[in-house]
Length: 188
Image (cartoon, rainbow, N blue to C red):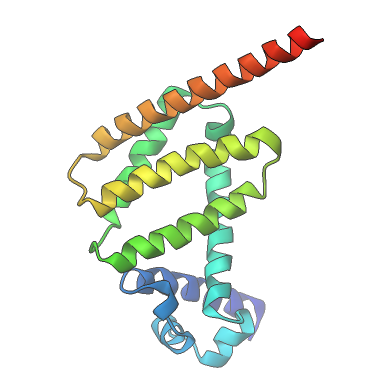
């Protein structure tokens, strides 16, 4: 199997994992089931991955890279209009891909969110790591709760709600930084 075929198999396995996670809890997904859904042989699976957890880890790393690229500027220097547009697009995707609201979906969303957050956290240093984690935590938690509760509100309403929460977080973080700076300069 050449590199192009291996990449195709890896991509198909990642896609198959996402689809299976819509149907059942991740811990119940087997290599055999995943390979069959991806239409690859088990031997091809093991050329690319060592386990289903390895597929999940690779998927989380890819999603984290994509989110870092798409959100780096938003997380560090958020413009209100850009953040609102991003949230609206994200929430429309949540609604579009929500599928059935079974417990397996909520469990799997948590597994993916934790994996992606951990990968993103490793790419930042100092306060930027915690600022990004807090912002992503607000977005993921509220979007997850919205999906779990049946998506009763519109994506526009949820984007406005999340923006309000993020503004509170930004204002509190800026205030705390100001107080720490002021206290430090008084000691000097």
